[in-house]
Image 1: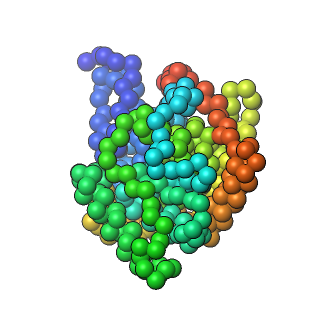
Image 2 (image 1 turned 30 degrees about the vertical axis):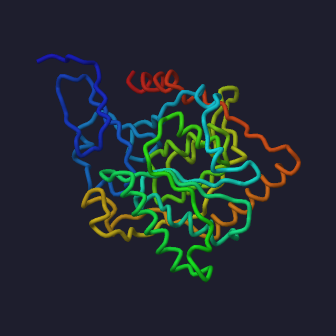
Image 3 (image 1 turned 180 degrees about the horizontal axis):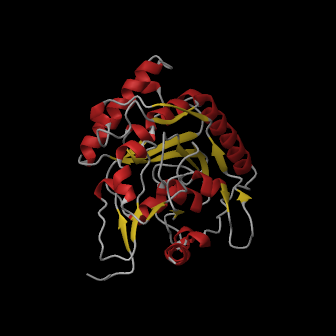
Length: 317
């Protein structure tokens, strides 16, 4: 039986990799967050001739970032003008509502750092796999309410500043409009494979506050097309974090052998996040008072579909 294809890229979790002798090269492209890969799927990964991952991992042959269309960040999109006024600083979090992405930690920092009367907003765009939007909203609101009761910063829970919570499906253009309506993207995640919302936020010129995970290294020190080396991004801030063992019950794990207590993930520092939030708030408010606030868009040509495709071809050669 001869080779029918020069290479086949299997874009799956390694659980589902399969070797096929008809392929000249079996390539595994997998965006996973776990550091426990040696225990979860080593045998499956050994079936592949090469392992690709959006970020460079020690066990991966090549780093293949998620490609984007850089022109998308240069257009204007419908935003949240009916809910947000221009004289406020808008923080936001975007992602699936799961423990790893740490939404409640971001909200705890926000409500601790900012008084309810300060000109700030916090926008949440989230979903929950397998749950309708209404149920997801009910679940998130319940957890936020419980968190606020535990924090006890005000006499009544209703005295806290109300978040803008979006759980309905919205189009890609509306997602982009959300990015353009906001100022500061928050991602205190325990671990990311890439985080497309973070990368999009960066593409739209927003400030980024994140743990050192996923695409953070790509945007914190990136290589613009006009330069030979790395350039540090002025609007990207790292939340200090330490590795610690995962504390996640079985019912909240995506798979029983992922994110077990044997595994470690990043645990962010609350004071670090609050410090960056206040610093960026002061900076933006000062610039708005002088009418000098303007989002500067980075050149992301190196992350275009064309250039990422060229990188993939180089890896295959």
